[in-house]
Image 1 (cartoon, rainbow, N blue to C red):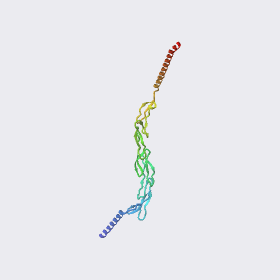
Image 2: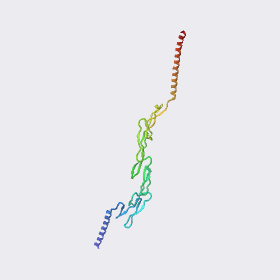
Image 3: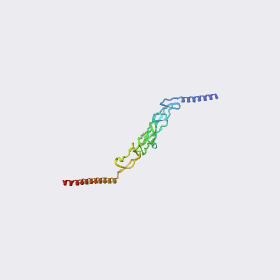
Image 4: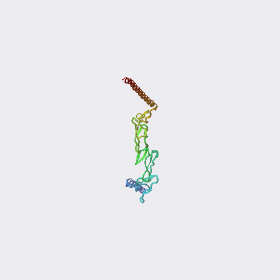
Length: 233
C-alpha cells in the first residue's frame, strides 16, 4: 500500500515537472502569444483578448472601448488608455485617438515642444519673450524657442520687433533734440523755437535796410560833390 502510494506521488510529480518544462520551453511564433502551455492567436489591432484559446477553441477577441486603443496585434487583455493632451502642459490635439492609433499631441500656439515620444509631444514650454532693448533674432517654432539679441548702439526696440530701429536724427531733420535715444526708446525731438527765429529774421532785415540807407547816402554825397565842378566848367 505504501509502495503503491509512493509510485502514484512520483508519477504526479513527474507529470507536473513535464508540464512546467513544456511551458518553459514553449516557443510561439510572432503572430501567437503564450497562454499557459498553449500558443494562442493574437487579437488584431484595435482589439483585446477576451478569453485565451484552449485545445478546442480559438482566442476570443473584443474591440477596444472608447478612450482606449491597441495599435498592433497582441495577446493583452486590456487596451491602452488614449493619451490626453494636457492644456496645462501647453499641448493640444494634432490627431484624435482611435481604436488602433493613440492621440498625437502638438504644442499650443506660442509654445515649443521639449519632450517627444513616438512622434507625439508630451510637454511644451512657452516661447521666450524678448525684453526691451532686445530684438527677435529667431522666431520660435513648435520645436524651437524664440532667440533674442541685444540692440546695437544708435538703435532701439521694445522687445516685440524683429529688428532694432535707428534713433530719430533730430538735427538732420532741423529739429531740436529733447532727449537722446537709448536701447529701449527712440530719441525725442521738437520743432525749433519760433520765438527765437523771428527776432533773428527781423535783425537781418534791419541790418540790410541800414546798409542800403548808408549806400544811398554815400552815392548822394558823391553826386553833390561832383555837381559844382560841372557848373564852373
